[in-house]
Structures are given as C-alpha cells and as structure tokens.
Image 1 (tube, one colour):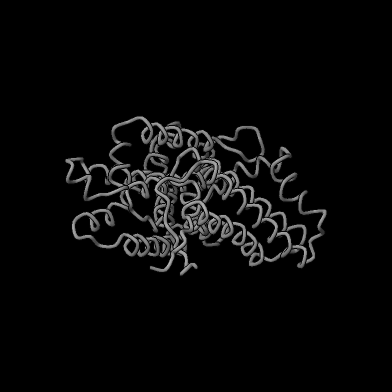
Image 2: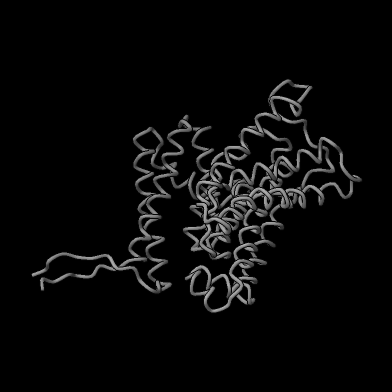
Length: 353
C-alpha cells in the first residue's frame, strides 16, 4: 500500500515535457477563457476569429500584436536577466517610469541638436533605469536587504514622482490635462510602414540577440549560471560574484528604462499616468514562462502581445469590461503557470516503512 506521494523537483526538465506542459496549459486556459466569454455573450464562432485570425493572421492585427510586443520584450528580458543571478526585480514599473521621465525631460528641455536627440533619449532612459535599480542592488550586496521590498517601494516612489511632475511643471499647457506636451517629430521612433510598428522593434530584437550571445557563449554568461545556481559555491570557487550580479542587475534596470522610452517615443508620444500600468506582472510572467531564456522571451512576449490585442478587440466590439478582459487574460496565464508544475516536478510514491 502507498503511504502518500511527494512532489520532487526535477534536476533537468526535458524539452519535450516542458513544451507539452506549456502548450497543454495554454490550450486549457484558452478553453476556460472561451467558456467565460461565451457566458458573457460573445458568439462562439467569433472566438477563433478574434483570438487567432484577427490577432495573428491579418496584417492589421499582427501589426498591433507586434507593437504591443516591443515593450513586453524589453521588460521581460530585463526581468529574466535579474533572475539569472537570483535577483527579484519587482520594481520593473519604477525603472520604466524613470526611463519615460528621462525621455520626457530631454524633450521638454530640447537637449542637444535634433538629429542626436532621439539617441540621447534612449541612452539617458537606460541610464535612468540602471540608476533606479542601483540603490536596491547596493542594499542587497552590502547589507542583504531584500530586493523584493526595496525595488517595489522604489517603484511606488517613481509613480508618485511622475504624478508630481504631470500635475505640476510638466502639465500640458495647451490641454490642461495631466500629461506632458507632445514630443516633436525628431524625438519619435520612426514607423516601419506597417501599422503602428516602429523602430523600437529593432531595439528589442537587438537586445534579445545580445543577451542570448552574452548568456550562451561568453564567460560572463557562465558566471551568471554559476551564481544563479549557488552564489555561495560560486564565491568559494573564486568567481567574480559581485561583478556578475552588478552587470546583470544594472542591465535589467537599463532594459526596463529603455522600455519606458520606447513607449513614450514609439506609441504614446507623451508622458501620461497610465503608460507603465501592468508591466510589472507581465515582465515577471514572461521571464518565468521563458525560464529566463532570451529567445524564449521573444516568443512568450509575442503571444502575450496577441492576448492583449484580442482583449482590446473584445472591449470595443463586444462591450466586455476592462475587468473581465483582465480576468480572461489572467485565466490563460495562470493556466500556463500552473501547467509548468507538471514539468518542474515529478510525483514519487511514498511507501510505508
């Protein structure tokens, strides 16, 4: 007779099992989401049309999905880099806000000549994101202060700072609304001639390829794998633990700051109170589902962007509320996350002694 069962974490997850659990969870989540939407009055025949055909198989829908994917790639990749060295960056939105503020600051002050203004915006946004995560990094390395708390609190500070600026010195004088003035043409990312898809796509792809090369073929990537597996053992082996953690964590903040600049210069063209909403959970979900693999981050971000695009269509054409759209998206994502349990763990029967 069996005395019970134990869940034992696998030392290595086979690719076939990981893929099966991932797509199994995705299909289950989509089926459950479809059931909810049908109960809310969405025609059954429209589900395939909206979730697949209009989102991924038409030029307009695919363009919207790719546009939504661009900042998701950057925040997901930033989160993945930090997780590589066991640093939980819960301040994604704070670093994104700082990057967006840096972009707005350059625009408002008209810093530099016009041809160099966009590169200056992108560079300063990355610097701002890196500086905003530098304090939690220092607290973690020097006094072992939990980065979960420090990054989260700094995210709130960044949001209130944005509020202060938008209701104060940066308020648009023409409209009176709490948004910054519109960016000039020279401060915007150029469109690629496909819907609203802009040159931020090349930045996201370049970031993914660079991260994949660093992690896959460089000594720094080897150090990160060792530090992520066991920081104490890596230090005992003489590896540069502090340098490795600092590079990956600062890179994480820089990518999240770049995401803020990409949103401001690529789609919104101004700073508002809503541009950073939702990216915290999106970045964590993307990094987890991709298992901190840069190339997988690209795939997961694309699928999540499609889910956001389909949610927007449901709100406009079927009168589904924002809350229900978020619920449907959460059901799909939670199903995928739960399905990973079957890949990460195996059931071991426990027999009586």
